[in-house]
Length: 359
Image (cartoon, rainbow, N blue to C red):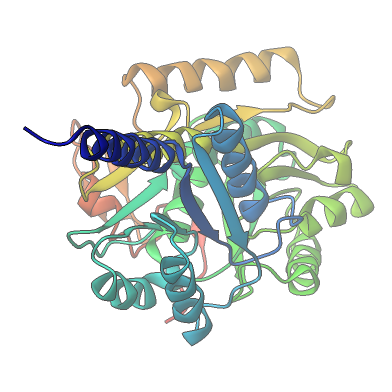
C-alpha cells in the first residue's frame, strides 16, 4: 500500500497534468494567411481577408489567425511560409498561384503542418489545394454585359496568361454571347495581379478600341474607376467595387472564401483533414453575382439571377458543347461538358475572343 503522502502527491500530479492537457486542448488553432497584395486592394486579397476574419469571428475563440500581406511570388514567400510553421501555425494558407513551388518545398520540411495553396495544382500528404469557380462569376457577369453593351465590344483587363484567367475570359464571353451572339471580347494583359497604374492604362486602351463594357481579372478597383471617369460600364471583381464607380458598376462577382476556410479549419480541428482539391462555386456558396448597379434593368438582373440559380442546381455549365474555339474549330461536341482537369488546363480562346494569348 502506498503512503498517504505519496497518494496525495500523485493525485496532485494527476490534477496538474489534467489542467495542462485541458489548457492545451483549449488553445486556439493557429492559422496563417499569406497574401499577394494589400488587404485594402478591394479585390482578391480583400475577399480572402474577409473570409479570414469571418472564420475567426465564427469560431468562438477556437481559431486564431494571422496574416502577412504584399508577399511577392519569390523566395520571400518561402521565408514567410517557413516562419509561420516555425511559430506554431497548424495551417498555412497561400493565396496566389505563384506561391506553388515555394509551398511544396516548405510543406516537405514541416510534415505536421497543413498547407493549403489557392489556385494551384500540386498536392502532397500535408499539402492541399483550393479555389473558387471564378469562371461561374465571370459567366454571370457576361450575361449582364451581353445585354448592356451597345457596341457589342467587351474588354477584359487580364493579369497573367494562366488557365485560370483564360478560363474566366472565355466564360465571360460565353455568357455574353448566350444572350447576344454579336458580342466580341478583347483582352489586354498587364502581367501583374495588382498594379493600379497598368490596370488603368489597359482600361483606357480598351475604351479607345471601342469597348463599352469592361471586366477585369486583376485586383484593384482601377478598372471600375476608369470606367466611371470615361462614361463606360464595368464590373466589380472578387469584391463589390461600387464605391469606386457607382454609376459604372453593373454588378459584382463576389467571392466568399470563408466557406472554404471554415471547412478546412473544422476538419483540421477534428483531425479529419485530408489532402485534396477543393473547388467550390455557386452551389457551395463560394461565388455569387451581387451589388447590381442602378443602370441594370430589372429584367436583366432577373435573367442573371436565373442563370445563377441554374448554376446552383447543376442544370447549367458554362463550358458545355457545342463549343468552338476562336478559329471556328469545334472543340467540344454537343451534349458534352469539359471536365475539371480539362478546365484547369485551358489554353485557348473560345469563339468571339479576339487576339492571341501571350506565350
